[in-house]
Amino acid sequence: MNTSSNIVVTGAAGFIGSCLVSFLNHAGYANLFLVDDFSEKEKEQNLLNKKYIQKIEREVFFDFLKAENPKIDFVYHLGARTDTTEFDYAIHEHLNVDYSKKIWNYCSEKNVPLVYASSAATYGAGELGYKDDENIIPDLRPLNPYGLSKNEFDKWVLKQEKNCLPKWAGLKFFNVYGPNEYHKARMASVIFHSYNQIKENGFVKLFKSHKPEFEDGGQLRDFIYVKDVLKICFWFLECWQKNPKTFISGIYNVGTGKARTFDNLVNATFLALDKPTKINYIDMPVDIRDTYQYFTEAAMDKIRAAGYTQPFYSLEEGVDDYVRNYLKHQKYY
View 1 (cartoon, rainbow, N blue to C red):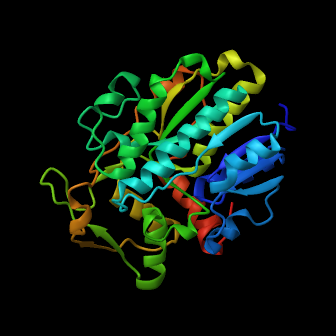
View 2: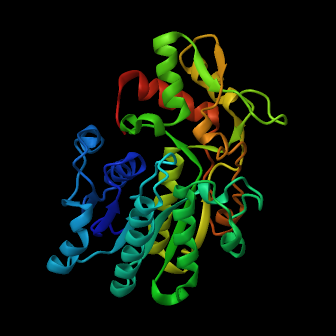
């Protein structure tokens, strides 16, 4: 592995981005260019003691590339507006579509491989299932502007000449949880909120179901531990460096392939705290009721067929590690 490679990580101060920076550091990579909006003070701890060359503000990144023309060997584009409750599409369009196109065009011009973050939000209510078949992407119907923006970029990518980048991968992240999400407030994982509710109140609030086919707490999601996400991201870099022929470009699901209920998740959180489960079911806010996903489950056969063989944390294993080794100690990854 060429650990002297120069790697760009956008969204580097965020949840998954900062974890990836740490993962790359532990793998021996320190020549990192970190891109984000670094004005948010609550995200500073995410990058404490991380190794990198330079931090570059998101809105001047392309000016920096033009002026400095650094040698870049690989790009992870994880930066995005991820707030599913932000309904101003113009914000999502700027950060998730237009900015992503500029990243793609840079990589195309400089012949640099790219791994970028898409989202399971692109699948909407799952009318067409959750299979990462690129043929269905134009027909997907996301439920919110965030999902729409992610799908618009995926659609745009598929219209580009396949050979304009040496290699590329779009990763549809499902419900990711884990350390370094302390700053995410309302958008943090249900595990994070459950832990804090247990510490403060001794019980967890979960949304009631507003669909008769689902019991309260029986809504199902594909929860994936961030450490598994990092392994997948790194695997593409390994493929590129060891044998580029093994890097198969395309859009891939990143989940576990096994949907679990919110009750399962909360039970695992109580178990990690060595406490008995206590759940109070509350009405779902009206503003998200019509756009709420009741079921997601990633079809994972495509990335397996591409050669990824690592096992995934079970929900219980991931929650236990997250609670005992990070949340209890307010520790960062």
